[in-house]
Image (cartoon, rainbow, N blue to C red; front, side, top):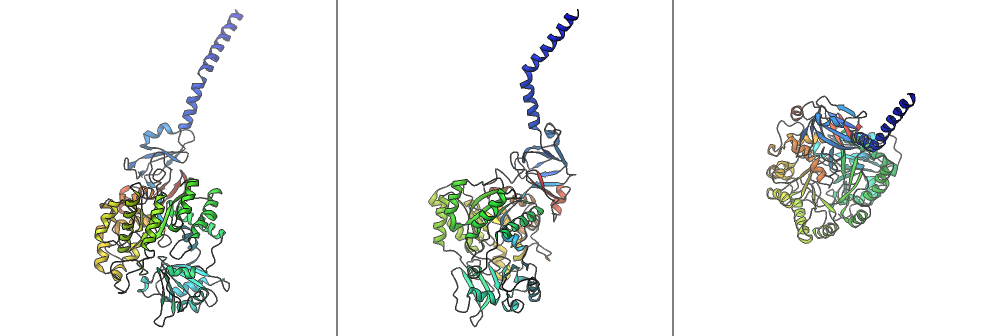
Length: 573
């Protein structure tokens, strides 16, 4: 009897083993599929704006391996929640995609954080005090660098070298205006650069002189190269520190991707951007020190080197570092009276501004760049400069044929009324910086007259209505890198101290402003398949705001972010 019982036990065990062996692969695949399908994180209990027009608002989304896995309501996420899934409950807070700053000079911003800061200075005494404070601990011969001053803050009179000569007798000084198109040197710096009364203005620049013909210390646009050439370049370690410092600052403001136009103001060496790529960005990328995503643009005159590099490595060096396109200047800036207009400046009747680059050269090099499939971005602020660039882009399309180029005009600040429609018709992206109007609102009418200012300045809503894609940025360090403040500026157009909006008809809606800092900004650098919206497959870069409802957010845009995430990982605080 025992033998029969043992036989039955053996046969039963054998049957179980047989079916286990037969079914194990299926069971194993199912187990592995369940584990693989689980999300790393599910974000819920939030008001989530995706910047995806197909589904602009959702209640929750899931993240796996640094990318958005699914968006929808919370119940649609339940099958993605495993034992290791982190549930991020946000108590109703507003979530938006990570901000993309479409125009920064990133290392310049990081360097400026450790230099003489003249932003907000309201007069000569304050100006001198700031420079004097910067002299503490400096050795004789050491350069004093900084910037951010805005003469419109104290009535418009320009600073001169004699303001600071007495407090800097043994140290050369260079202090750039906030827009980067003008700067002040002390007399020692002028002497080192060999700039004197006999020095001629270079093409596209001005050495401002006294009635007696002596330099005042002010250099405009390409004249700055005469002095910048004698300033020792920043060390590699200082530039690397500047990148880390700038990146942490950007994350604090909710910026997860930036478009770096380089340390390339008029007069800067075109080699700086290439040195920064090799010495700083590639170093950070290979060392795992990249904290935000960076898309780099390079000086237009180096287009062939960029074309060769893209041919060799592609546009994506890594998930953090991308090669964008090339950039040039058509004119200067309004604040420095060097933006190019059809009519003269009201406060300088013989001055129409500066054309920094000849049209023929700009056209020929843009044609060559475009034939190599490079994206082109050109700085244009005055109405004539914008028309010049639009004419140039039209000629390039006529010569090279139609394709997806995404031509950009950087700034597009002052336009003729008839010009606005051309942006949409030609599909040219307007890369604009809302916070610039906070500085220009008080001075634009003095410089170009009320009618020209009121009918053509910062035409955000008109550009949108004409079908133009707008990408927002800061131009940091010209303006602070602060998307939330820029969004509020675009919504209200109310400069500090004003009770009313400046040109209220050009205010835009909250969703349009958010799109300009997210999906439109991503499109403007050919990265809309990777970032810019909370869409399945894209990187999980997002910002949590302190606002606890959409209505609260729309009524009072907050001044700070609550948290910043990149690849689904908290990066700030």
